[in-house]
Structure formats: C-alpha cells, structure tokens
Image (cartoon, rainbow, N blue to C red; front, side):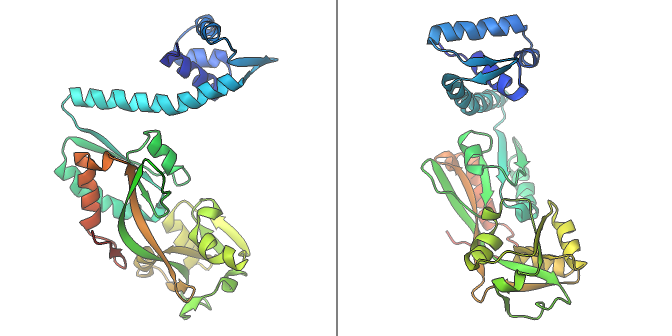
Length: 304
C-alpha cells in the first residue's frame, strides 16, 4: 500500500539528490528511509530507483510515484491547513496567483476592501510570472489565477473582469512618439524591454512581431515596471504595456504611447478558478468585487 511517507521520500530524494540528504530533511535515519522504500518495492514487486555509482536514477515506477507525489502532497497539505483553519473558526486563506505582472497595483485595490469585508479570510499573492497557473490551480497551490491568457480546460472556470489595450511605450522624443500607430517593421532596429516571460507568451511577440517575421535588434528583460520605464525614458529601449499602466507613467516620465498596429491589440483580464470553487462564499465575493471595483483608467469593465 502506498502511503504518504513513500511519496515524501521519493520527492525529497529527487529534490535533494541523495538518500542522506532526504533522510535529514525528513528527520529519519538513512537506514529507516532505505528500509521503508525496500518494503514498498517488495510490496509493489518493482524497484523505485536504480543505482548508478553513488547516484540514484528513478525507474519508470519511480517516476510515476514522483508524479503522484507532486500532485497529491500539495493537495493533502492544503486539506490539512484548511481543516485546521475550520477547527479554529477561520474560513481560510485565499491564495492568488499572478500571470499579469502589470495587474499587481490594480489587485491591491481589490484586496484592501476584501480584507475589510472578510475578517476571517487571509490573502496570499504569489507573483510567479513564469509559473504555470493552470498547473498551480489543479495542484491546489493557488485558489485564484489572474491572467490575460486563459487556458480553457475541463475542470477550470474563467470569469472575465475588464478589457484593455496593449500599447508601445517610447521616449517622448522618439521618432514614433507622434505616430498614430506603429508597424512591426518599426521595431526591427529597436531594443525591446519586457518582463522576464517566454517570448511565446508575450503579446508583443505572439500578436505583433512574430506573425510579421520581425525580430527586434535586442530583447532585454526587467522584473520591475518602474525600472523598465525609467530605461525607456532614458532612451535605452521601448516597451509594450497595457495602456492604463503606460498612461499612468506618462504623467510622471517623458514617455509617449503608440498603438500597436492600425487596429491595436485588445486584451482581457480573467480570474480563473477550479470549476465549482467559484461558488465558495469568500471566493465568489472576491470575484464579484473584482468585477465591480475601481477598474484602471483606460479599461472597460466587462458586463455580467
């Protein structure tokens, strides 16, 4: 019978690289750990690891166990935490994952009134801009995903919140500053500044440059919006951001906003949940608040 300790051992050995390190992390002796796995292997009739010198390599059965561990252990941990909170008279923690780097400031405006209204619910925001939000939802690492690029899949539910336009931000004296719109070819000789996200997930590439077969002269990344736009203001490059965020910075820095293409690039912000969870009281309240509260200037709330 597979038990939780078996999954923890397989996961710890894979993460830490050795039985010795795994035993130390799990607060057991190495001999006890080895005995536990040998007993499991005897019961299953197959090996979990193969020894290659001093290292261990997972067998096919071992890799299957590891996949199970990576899915099941976070779920069990979340269940235990949730049950403890219920026992203590608390509703729990709303864990929000962010796949929209510029949306953080908007999210703060939602969190404050939510915390006031739900005194027995905490909020934890995970700003992992390159993480797989869908996987995090399915693995119960988060309860709510803020994303401009929903991956529609059975078991998930997405609620649209507001529309916005993705635009190009250039220095105020840039040759494109007075243009009605920019063409992909205009960026061929430019340094493009973006958040550290895979290019196939960046709208400026997937919806503008790549279809036209254009690659910018250089692509640099920055995790901080403020630094990115300071770089643009100092004529170190150009950037693509939501119009509402770009225009906010234009009031403080010598920047200009240019439409991307004649038709522009229209985007939406969605809140993703596991199907059925959106009816959970505090989660439903957060979504309703997000749909109705103080949308950024230059955006369009999506009607019910």
